[in-house]
Length: 130
Image (cartoon, rainbow, N blue to C red):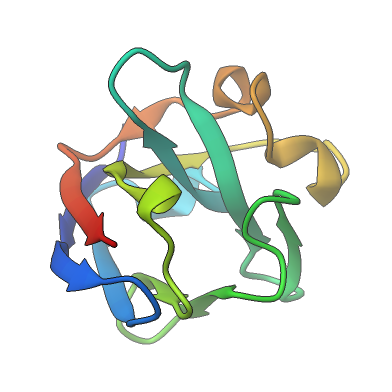
């Protein structure tokens, strides 16, 4: 498995921005897809963004489309999630994930996407106040 370490979470007011980072190390050759998931208290885990770094294809959950941007720096083995126009409903623990998949990138977001990833970070809290 790949070791993933997230950073960049915090508290922000509605309408603000945050950028999450996730550094991957160990066995990075074994993955070809990376994503961001989130889980709010009492709610299921949701895949919000995914990327195939090799070709740059991306997908987003409808709830974040147009506000969040996922990107990957191959040289630094770092995944990013730029979050703009944050809303209180974006409050959750955000997790970085990695895996190996042949699924279409749109299948890598949503409530059931987690099964396609096998490495997970420890999570970082994002809190958006109104």
